[in-house]
Image (cartoon, rainbow, N blue to C red; front, side):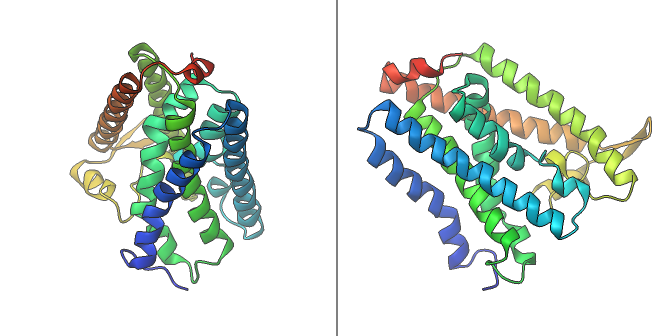
Length: 256
């Protein structure tokens, strides 16, 4: 089965994590926190397991080093951010998972261009792509509606500062790989993801060579601006949701 963008299989892919999450939340809403946390850990294990499968498959296919190091945002979300937020009930990771991993994971389902390049959706790489992005969305939404962590604007600023530093570091990492002829797309900080609006933003800017690095300041500022807007929007909506729901005893388990 060959994947084509914006056909009925793609629409099913886009709606599937929302439907699955609604079912899981409905089933688990009346359960004890221990049972809810067990389900959360299962979601986390699924993400880690498929990251391992992905990397083993990439290794035996002889893929480039940058494909084997899971530092792309969605890969980072799958093996560290979402599982870390669930297993450790960490507030900062929960904030990043909800405000950035969730929209990033879902965007990768909406702009699922990488799937077009596979001969079949039943290839290991294609299966991993689908499972990882679907479960990033499910895991982040499960955090939102079951764990319901509490954080303030100061926490938001700290988390955003961490991500901003990581973004700047990826510019250097991407440049190092690219200078050695290895494609590298961590955070898409140097080159845009094909088939997405990032290509347009990249074309609005100009590449400059500074201290051996290729930098597109306009493109980088646009990415950070969009990330900021998305994170602030979801942070605001989530806090409104929290206030409307009132105090929940389970929220205390995720206080920072």
